[in-house]
Length: 247
Image (cartoon, rainbow, N blue to C red):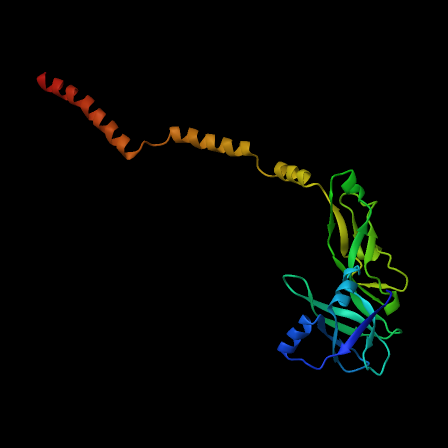
């Protein structure tokens, strides 16, 4: 990763009101820390830091920090964290981590893909990013802004694992080598057809309903119907009884 120059100034006013005035003047508060020196409060140009972040592939930015009236002319530092306003996205605060040129450091970098996967192009599948960032370790000058994976030959059901990625020279990719980074999933329509074939069909449900209805025809009559039937039997039995008495 190539370092870029950035001008900074010592910051003495730390109160909340002072920070608001600082941002209103076109600067944002910052802090630099590391093993070589004690943490120091700084301020940098809002426009300058925003422009550097805008033209960077990620917020992993290596800077040659020159602090006004500092004993050291330049301090090599990595942009460790950037706080943004939740609504307008403006930079609110920056943390710098001072590093040494001969000391390896570990950072997380974004994963990008190149090419169109064969399973997407000809099979209608979809490319899934399982891991969005990878943890890498290297000297500051060798740090990559991102890790790019060529997915052109990736068919449906195939994936790229962490151990299959070839890192840039001088860079070590950390983590479980069996972890899936990107994969090509089957088309959703095909998955739905398979799921429908495996599940009970609607015809089975209709047949079950028909059987229940047929069974209901031979069921015992309701209480009202039973009383009516009993009344009919009594009515039929009365004339016969009268006839026997006459005899």
